[in-house]
Length: 352
Image (cartoon, rainbow, N blue to C red; front, side, top):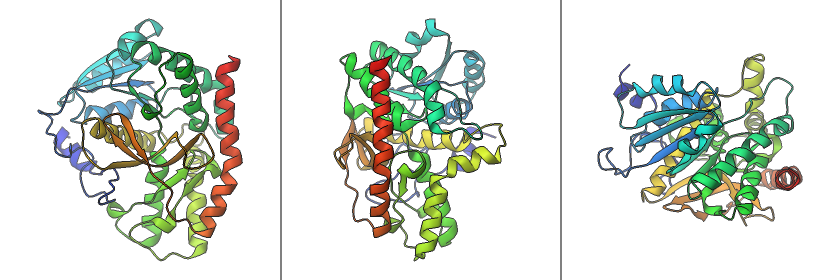
């Protein structure tokens, strides 16, 4: 299948404040032809893993990427060689082992982190914390040293804790910029759109559903009352859709029967968000996505909501809008768990 054909397969857009539709192509550069787009280096940490490999493929197909740097502890040269044969703009280099991490990171505009172990049946995101927290901490220390001004897209779970871990590491190294640290919650939005479109019987390409809160279980709060186009769903249907969105990861883990987690859909969501960040860096106006960022929207230090992206990362953290009674109850219910997860991430850095 030719690259042009693949681009047509993956036609989606980031959410924009002007249209909030998925009509334009994910691979289009919104006014920037690949020949005239600025040089942009994207680095993927964990590129040989279940999320990293399909994410590497999708970023290779993005015309806004001029240099694609792939890093993992092992297996990356093969992934890089494979992806490098695709006839698109970016030059691909693969790096493996701790010794080559600095080379992989130097000069990066965006660093995407899917590194770590995936969820297995019966595993909670808290179980993941015990393993992934140390991995994220060491990678962020390297980012602070080799590319302190890069935008960081955190995929490694539990995002509710790994984003605060990254923030604390950057603070301790004196390089923290709250505008450049993002928890990637786009998969929650992707799921909410898909599930809503199916139930409301509308074209998913035109659906938009904001998702706020965090990125685990009950902390995920889709705002179906703000969904467009309106589907006139019953309260019972909204509750069921909310629960399914919250448990989407578990649905995939159980369906794969111990052989993986949500890798392909997560790679797609990660590519969508990275594309939005690239467009923001390049000055494309009104690029809006939901993301878990430092925030004053609630009384919690980090929170996922709609964010306008720009040349410096976060241009504006947008408000929550009007919530239904069900959503307001969900907001209050998620706060204790999200607060605990944030505090756990902060404490980890100071205790280790």
